[in-house]
Image (cartoon, rainbow, N blue to C red):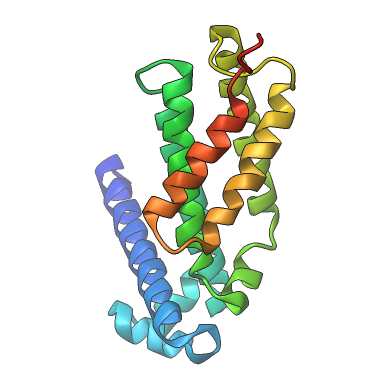
Length: 193
């Protein structure tokens, strides 16, 4: 089979899969997880039920795939910010603000959907990855003098992630940014140093 044909098939499959993921996420957000059926997803996606079942066995598997896609995108976004321009302190602020805003969006899942989406190995792996790269950024900040050196970067990463998880219940982006400022204050070297 010519390579162009394979790429076209793969593009089609990716487009169908993406349409199913997005349609399902919208339907679940609007109606709740238990109210969404495979038939409704197929109808709203513009594909047949048989085709849908070739991609996914049930609604939960679609939402899990959607969530994995979201996590991958969020980690990519945070890594790009971490690797962006500016000093360690500036990039740390940017990463922490983005993480706080992700936490705010995540809180909107609701308890039933949150329980489904946050139980897998994918989430645990993403959290470990995030912790590791945040620790590395904090270590860079210690070396540049932007971050305190009396607490290990690993412990400071844990502090940041737990402190900013609270952004999930804050009422606004401004409140999340204030929480980031408070968190950053705890990371600064003391005046006596």
